[in-house]
Amino acid sequence: MEKNFEVSLLLDFYGELLKPSGKQMAELYYNDDLSLAEVAAETGITRQGVRDRIKRCERQLFEFERKLGLLRRFQTLEAGLDDIASHAQRIADAADNNDIRTLAADILQRTCELKEKE
Image 1 (cartoon, rainbow, N blue to C red):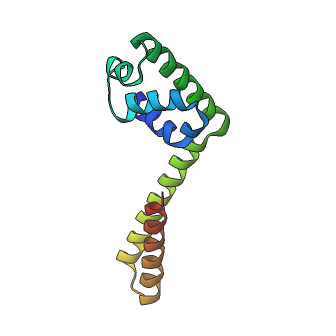
Image 2 (image 1 turned 120 degrees about the vertical axis):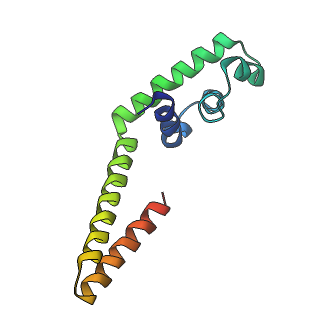
């Protein structure tokens, strides 16, 4: 996974655990795609100060993930739901029995609903 994308996902999961100023800078840099100079102008500190704060936030986010593993669990759950939906679709397509097709369609619908809630 690309590092910037991974950090952006980690911000979604753990951003509230960061100091507000660090969270703001990391979001501007990773989510809004601002340069370090642009973040510095936005926040009123030096470019080097922004870089240092963002690097500190990155370390904290990766440490939170190492300890808690929420992103890893989310990705595992999402992959599992994709597999279940795929299998349910194959069962529905191959089934000769209406009850089996109905059950497979229900499973497929439920997995889609669960993925939408994410």
